[in-house]
Length: 405
Image: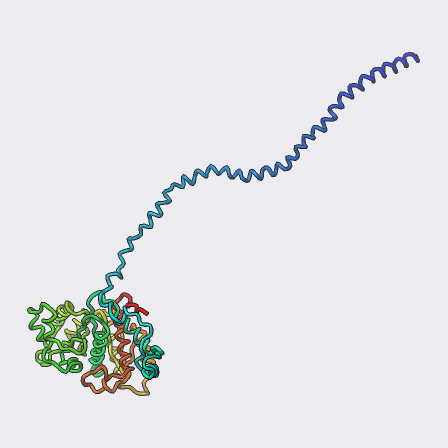
């Protein structure tokens, strides 16, 4: 029995010994946990940084780099689009005429000589050595004169109208014609279309030898400007065509006659300024408004003068002349006025209805009703009519010439 148990122990030791080598064999697998050391490639933890180069992988869209070639050099076609020389036909170019080549516009003026006031006195006293230049008033006149010289694309007919007589309509026609003719280089004619023996020619030239009726009787023989000059008189640079002075013959001056005269005048004159009658329903007045490209309505700083000017505008609107009224210029004469009249309210009323309003101060020379001489007209009155001429010219279109400094 004890032998058996001893023997069992031997065998057990012998048996146990082999397992020890077996257990040593598994020891190599123990290094296998070191095999996770291949996790030492866990420097692959930087591999997340490798995905960062993968950010350049959007460079994989670099195949789209070929796409820029596919952006097809038709992109030069947009340069072809700049073939917009089509806008070269600018409408303003034909408006340029030789009338702009004057001493006033092409001669450089470093310092203009003052024409009035203390500036002129200093210039004269110094013998021309000291030139303070022109003042604001003279600068304003020069600017207005440039506007009057605005290029004219074609013949223009300006109607001067009023429902009421005695407000200075003929005076306004005469002064407007003189200012346009004096400051422009083209031909201007003042036509007296008053069927009631108008006084325009008497105010400007004092002569009524030939009249519009004489011209009508000789229209068949008019082929040149010299043929018309036989029937007009000259006031400065303004041509004047008088109305018929015989009431029996003047009454026959109707719309057809007016249109025939204007058709001839427009062939040889750039601007026709018409002094119309007071009868708004007269046939000649109908023709005047039908051909007018500009309108001047005359009133005064009195109750009757202002209301009649307003009634004139009302009548024109009622007869389909709304556009002409909106472009019209209203002239208010201060020959007759009173401190009881609210002049500012009168001016504000017409400014709401028309393009502009000009107030002409009272002038002793014009108030006589005699022949007009520009050198006797006061400076303030002359400036007012120069402004009127500039406003009328503003409606011609185009830009005024630019003066060289």
